[in-house]
Amino acid sequence: MERTWLGAFISAWNLLLEISFPNIGLWYEGEEPKEGDSLRTVACFPIVGAVLGYAAYCIAWILCRFESLSSSAAMSAIIIVLGLEIITLGRNFNTLIAFLEAKIQGLKELETIAYIEKEPYFCKTSLGLMFMMALFLLKIACVALLIYYERTTWIIITLAISYAVQAKISTSVDLRTSQPFIESDNRSEKLAWFFAAVISMVIGWSYSPAVVIVLILAYYLSDRFNQYCQKNFGGITAKIIGMAGSAAEILILLTGVVLIARD
Image (cartoon, rainbow, N blue to C red; front, side):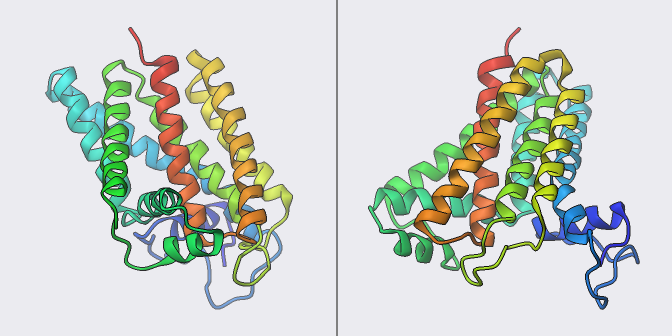
């Protein structure tokens, strides 16, 4: 288990992403978890998101040095969105589409869980396929507009807050075990949101009102979604956690376009 905050970050990375961080001796898988290990891991969720966001920012910055703003914005958006899907193998986004498709079909709660947990997932309706294409293109369009209007830092804020949403959901009751999905206390969730707020305010100070609005909305909606899962499903699963993060990404990107993407 992790002994340091850097080790906690790596542990969080491995929990959230499909491309694992190599074990370089910062945590020890053969040892029993120590007090505070899970707390630090969950707290590092938004830091993982911020690092991914910074990588996206660097991609956009580099491409803008060699291409016109419009073409670099479009190219950067495609690379960034595809990259984010690759590091999660598209599972979070696919689960979101499966959830929407299940709701369109009018499936009941237990049927919905079985539907989104099924592997592999393929769209079974034309409307589901349309949702998938529309949301994917919406993400690309939002990222492109943010880069074009030189609001690329909003991508960092988006990922930091969306991973804080996953931190909040991850401390809920596991549907399969009736125990917390990640053994931790309320301090881990609060610390994750504190990190997300600090990162977002520091990076987005010039448009801090928009940051405050998004933080409040993200926390409120994630809390409501958590209650929905507990009431209707009896708990959460790893896929539900990822789905919540994917939905948060889209909503925060869209909010950024509406609030700050202008000349």
